[in-house]
Amino acid sequence: MGRNLLFVYGTLKSGGSNAMTGLYPECVFIGTADVTGRLYDMGGYPAVVLDDAGYSVVGEVYQIDDPTLARLDEFEQAAEYNRMPIEVTVNGGTVSCWIYGPGVELCTGKTRIESGDWIGYEQSSLQNLPK
Image (cartoon, rainbow, N blue to C red):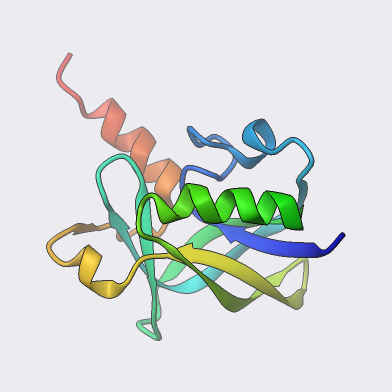
């Protein structure tokens, strides 16, 4: 069975509503990492557009098997996200990973998350709700 590395940056991160370790207990946490791009609020979940803009998007790398990757393909396709290859630095070394994201056109008019951290952004948004 194949082994894959996956970079997650949103609800699949630790502390997210769809945390990898909760939905896919067979996954193995490898470490924290970041990619260069722009993170957007899509309304309940984020989207990353990879580019050379110089912004850091914070995430985590997990090792997953082929059946889990296939289940994630279905999960992410519901949001019109595609799986793409990317290189990230984790634990001091560069590794090839998969990442899911939309086409740039889906992010038009959406709020950019300047911190690059979905979990921090979501927590601060919840704290700012009227009481």
